[in-house]
Length: 171
Ligand code: SF4
Image (cartoon, rainbow, N blue to C red; front, side, top):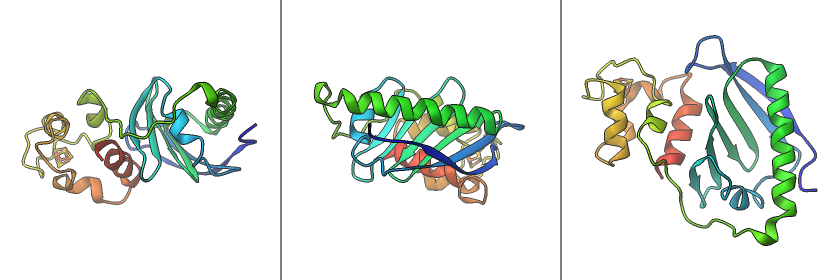
């Protein structure tokens, strides 16, 4: 077994979807050794080997794994969050058991569609970045034609999780 538990650390309001929450968990052991193997699983949209940050797209929202922290966005309530943590512990342990048949990922992975970026943007279409919509900005991010820094609202309070996730996806 690699991991015993992921404990609920805190919850925050999920700005991506009103009424939903972001849940943050602390694994009972650092995930640094398992993350390169988890990066083989389906649903990965971003992986940064140098900092070991791994992002998955979920049916709704995202899951981002850091060595010492786990974040799920667009979660209904704490109860669902605890279930997600338990499922993740199972997936981690099962991956660890099969690690000899897997190859540790050593290259960066990036999303293959601009909508993965769009879903993490503030989606206010404020135009501060110079683009007419957040979707247009996401398209340019995808094509590497604009810097994330141009979206000033993303650097304001409340967007930290999404900004860090986007930075990991873009690196
Ligand atoms: S600055 Fe950010 S929130 Fe505003 S339109 Fe551009 S991408 Fe969207």
